Image (cartoon, rainbow, N blue to C red; front, top):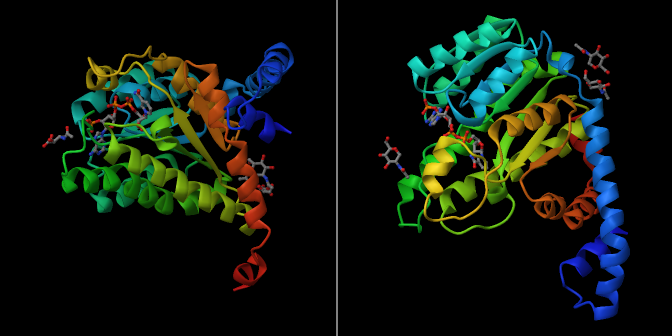
Amino acid sequence: MILPLLSVAMGLHGPGPCLMAFMKKYLLPIWGLFLAYYFYSANEEFRPEMLQGKKVIVTGASKGIGEEMAYQLAKMGAHLVVTARSKETLQKVVSHCLELGAASAHYIAGTMEDMTFAEQFVVKAGKLMGGLDMLILNHITNTSVNLFNNNIHDVRRSMEVNFLSYVVLSVAALPMLKQSNGSIVVVSSIAGKIANPLVAPYSASKFALDGFFSSIRAEYSVTKVNVSITLCVLGLINTETAMKAISGIIDREPAPKDECALEIIKGGALRQEEVYYDNSLWNVLLLGNPGRKLLEFLYLRSYNMDKLINN
Ligand SMILES: NC(=O)c1ccc[n+]([C@@H]2O[C@H](COP(=O)([O-])OP(=O)(O)OC[C@H]3O[C@@H](n4cnc5c(N)ncnc54)[C@H](OP(=O)(O)O)[C@@H]3O)[C@@H](O)[C@H]2O)c1
Ligand SMILES: *[C@@H]1O[C@H](CO)[C@@H](O)[C@H](O)[C@H]1NC(C)=O
Ligand SMILES: *[C@@H]1O[C@H](CO)[C@@H](O)[C@H](O)[C@H]1NC(C)=O
Ligand SMILES: *[C@@H]1O[C@H](CO)[C@@H](O)[C@H](O)[C@H]1NC(C)=O
């Protein structure tokens, strides 16, 4: 039902004036109601107590959205271990978390360019909290908004820090997450769903997250691993880093980072597959991509997974 509607809306069939009028009159309001219901029902289900006493890791938590998530989780009474490179900033974040009501709060500083650090970080964090319920992967390496300058080092660093370390962290956390029926929350971007110029290495790493984590989500579903994976697709958010990077290049109104942080936590707690957060309702609507979901469903039917599971 939604599929043909979408392709019409996107102009693929070149709708006539009559159809356009029909759409404007009936379909858009219905769509709006559907979306309103969808968001309303999702919001109603969430209760901050869901995070009370939960053991949560937040990466890239020294500033921006990650810092904001740490504060929100602290207010909800979660146990926290945060990480980033800068020790001084993390120290401040941890003391503020304790003031806000965190059940406990610790930091471990290090760089996610180092995969050994990534792996050991998760083990240490698990020991500090005595387990793990939610792994929030949020850090990114510094990125310039610019034409691709043929610098292979930038591509490698983006793939390693923004993608490979996420895989390493998840693998290290999986035994604990299996025990708790826990959640992996992957922070991505609209640039990880559609192509944007000026951020090629960043975009590549964010697309990679979608490919990898959506693929293992399908595997978990078949192999009955009860660990949820939430991919968060964010539009422009008003963090200092982002505002500085796009200044004078991209002219768009950013969305607020505190609300963004809350939506990510909600999506993780409700075990949603994807969270879309952006100023524009149209973006949120079109990013859902029902064509892809339908194809994924149909492809899965031709797999004989039983053979693999029994091995
Ligand atoms: N802001 C936006 O407009 C926007 C839009 C779409 C998606 N997102 C996504 O949202 C997430 C957070 O973005 P943000 O704007 O909040 O970023 P941010 O404010 O720049 O924060 C990035 C965090 O990552 C840490 N970090 C940087 N390099 C690191 C490294 N090598 N190893 C470990 N940690 C490192 C930083 O701390 P240190 O420097 O101390 O290490 C900082 O805590 C990212 O995944 C981003 O892709 C943001
Ligand atoms: C990122 O930071 C490193 C070191 O701090 C610097 O050498 C590099 O040029 C920066 N890269 C970008 C794309 O800003
Ligand atoms: C995880 O889920 C299974 C199946 O629903 C349940 O039997 C088990 O008690 C749960 N474990 C925890 C720690 O919640
Ligand atoms: C998976 O874990 C969640 C959270 O503990 C629980 O609500 C759900 O019932 C579990 N699902 C299955 C299929 O075991």
